[in-house]
Image (cartoon, rainbow over all chains, first blue to last red; front, side, top):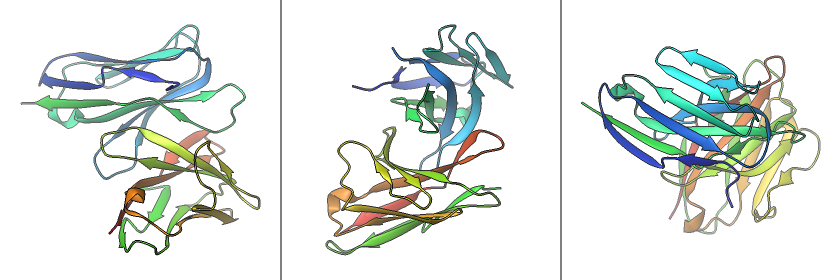
Length: 112
Length: 115
């Protein structure tokens, strides 16, 4: 059983469209990170959220941490081909130290 | 620039041989590093936590005698895949936490192909 479930698993959209990726769990996380990974490379950190209800914006990307710190969402506005990649959420369980638990991943493809 | 570096980026080895992958923290000391395995188009699966100066902590289902981890210094952890088989072919990624930033960074990953 995966601790962090992401949806959708795959997403193919046209340039300019908006999209939202969800990361859900029944566990409470002390913090949650979002990463983007391109083929053959390591994940690159996009954002860290630590406070329930927190919203962070990074240009066209908006990240939200659920009030109960069990879920998170990533919203991309006006997607561009350069946004294509594997998006991963990862959480640190309370009392889990530095160990990250990764979500199931969302493969995004943005076409012209 | 990279804060965590892996070497080699890719390696091909014959079945039955052993191969070592290095993970280095650049410009900071990492008492803890993590090793992940990733199959194509799948998420990262934590294999083990590498602890400087002590034994690694392995996740359930990971064979500690097959995946040897050594964290001999504060900037270097190594993963050795022993008696490699084709099913060990995968993308192996390490990560380390920058204590002052409380942020985890990942290496570039290492592709292992066992033929």
